[in-house]
Structure formats: C-alpha cells, structure tokens
Image (cartoon, rainbow, N blue to C red; front, top):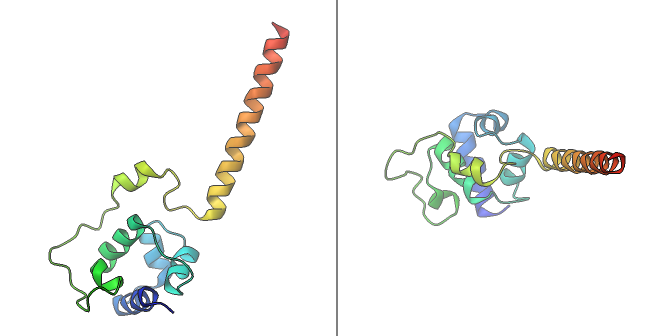
Length: 122
C-alpha cells in the first residue's frame, strides 16, 4: 500500500467516520473511495481537496510531504462549484458516466433519424 493510501485510511479511522459516510458527504461513490484507501487509484486534485476539507487534514500530510496533520487555517467544507462546473460528471462513478454517455449517444441518433425523416417528408 502506498503512503497516500496508508495515511488516508488512518485519517478516516481516526475521524470515526465510515468510508460510506465519508464518500456520501463529498458526493463520491463508496467504491471509488475504497480504491483510494486500498491504493488502487489516486484522487484528482478536486477530490483531494474535498477529502482534506472533510477530514480536516492537510493535503501535505496525505501526500506524505509532512508529518503534521494540521492545516494552517480553517478550510470550508462545502463542495467548490468550480469542480462541478469543470466536470459535469463530478462525483459520478465510471458506470454512471458510461450510462449517461450511452444515453446521450442514443438521443443524438434518435434526433438524427427524426431530422432525416422530416427532411425526406418535406
């Protein structure tokens, strides 16, 4: 297990929160959080910020850059709107993203077919 995963697991345990509760509080799937905790993947910058805010720990600590867990100033816990504005799929699982992308492709095909039919009738 890498340093980030080890430290994240430790901080979550110290917080008294269940992983499912933490994931829900930052609009993340429990499976995705589990991947971070088990060292299977690493969070994006936006997710790292949310984890740090929710767990009240410094990013430097989670990244292994310092052994101090504290942050120098209070950090708001709210989800930054910039994260959501940059990524319309923010907080969704890969399966949810794929489902949405499939639905969009299906709707586009339906619109193209409807347009082709109406053009032929005209």
